[in-house]
Image (cartoon, rainbow, N blue to C red; front, side):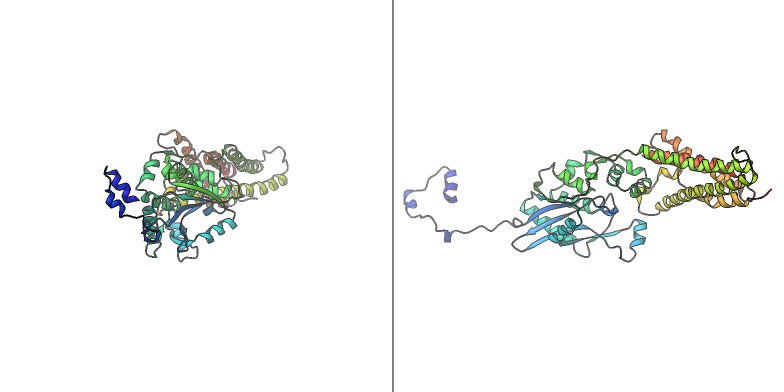
Length: 431
């Protein structure tokens, strides 16, 4: 029949004698065209939701490729790592994580994430047979031992960006073309919203993130988050269908980070009040100006309580700030580039570490009195400088929460050290 249609389109008709000798071919005589290579493959994107552990909070994804005729069902996963790997801890500190890619059983992987209540979404991808075959070849090549390993970078090169880049290659760059100029949120924005449920992780990641985390991003860059890649693909013609394989009972990630101004303000007030209050009690009991403590024995008892309280509070604060400053310095010698040039260094630096070491001798033994006072005043001055420079153009790191806490605390420590050791810092009980 196809031959007759082809002749007809040329505007001619076969002669009657020719028609008499032609019969319709029997079904067994017809040749069945071979299927186009790749048409037997089914390709989909598997997206796993956020989990409670820090490396699960940003979600996960993988490329699933199926060939029912051959019994093939493989999930290509770029998020493989092993904490027992030799040197993993030091590589972690240096920002030189070695992740790798592997092909896993799709059913096994999905079952694991269903069992851990992560939530699983599958998006069937509308690719041509040639594109499906190309994707299978590239994924298989990447899964070879000599090609599988890569240096993981949490924002720039991770399990999701690897999937994004592979899909973009398959569609000849059209994915990047569509989203590379589309405005998006910053890395800090997403880090804050996805870690909001864990205060310790939230503060740790946010405090040590430098100004690079606040640069305006694009939708293309936002795809470092698997759930964002999933959502942006919905805006393209790449998704043929979508299925919810498992719905998590966990709260959904926030659309935007919550405001914590009041909480940080309260922490700043309480911390500064503790530091200044204990120093005031120690100072008043030492000088005998506390009207409520008239006896010498009473003043001595109050002093014995207030001085250690101030030294303990100021010491813990100064130690934490000083060690944080050392971490920021060391980070410049690592590949943790998003920690570099952090304005919070003005709030947490080795000056506080020096003060932490000088507090006990200055208050209780009368040594290094001037040294401790100068270190405290200098640390407070640098902290205030960090607040003042916020008005300078180009210094726009989003660190207001930490200024609210650190500046009052440093000022309270500086005032407290001067108040407690101003009379010479003689040993307790000296006349």
